[in-house]
Image (cartoon, rainbow, N blue to C red):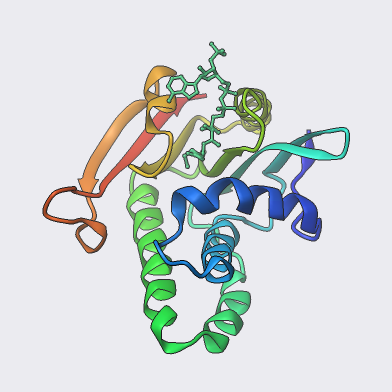
Length: 194
Ligand SMILES: CC(C)(COP(=O)(O)OP(=O)(O)OC[C@H]1O[C@@H](n2cnc3c(N)ncnc32)[C@H](O)[C@@H]1OP(=O)(O)O)[C@@H](O)C(=O)NCCC(=O)NCCS
């Protein structure tokens, strides 16, 4: 397993390409949509030894990024620079996303103990590569003595993947700012023993 390297622009772009269709707001401005999901990726990455990637023939295949309880990294310096350069119409969207991620992180941390780990970002850029990167990451967490893996996710993610693999649902909620009367925006916190 390799360490996910943010300075590898090709790999970072591969993750952005994969999630931009899933997680960005419905605007025609693709540059803003890409920036929006890059902010999500950066907010979920920690400066620790738990940022994993798998690649093959110079192409990224999957990533699994994790953090310890309450671990914070200075992603907000990058974030603030981008925010300051944004036109007014985009600033609110950019801020709401940051608040949402922080709020869900805090909710998840409330369930965790010091010997638990949080899966912060799990993405495969090639089908079938999600499972091996997460299994490799979980072997590493076990070897470090972690007891449980926690994660939060929502209706814009592959929620059924966790359900089908025996993750235990510990909390389900609705995030009102992203909900419409027709469609509640569902959030989920899952846990699994390591
Ligand atoms: C979640 C994710 C990382 C899984 O990676 P993946 O490469 O698709 O999945 P795997 O490595 O496990 O391999 C595919 C297997 O999972 C199965 N699978 C994929 N999605 C599934 C789902 N929603 N429910 C049940 N099984 C699923 C496939 O059918 C396949 O099964 P098989 O091994 O019996 O052939 C990937 O779907 C992804 O990147 N999604 C977008 C980002 C996301 O939602 N991330 C997670 C939440 S933050």
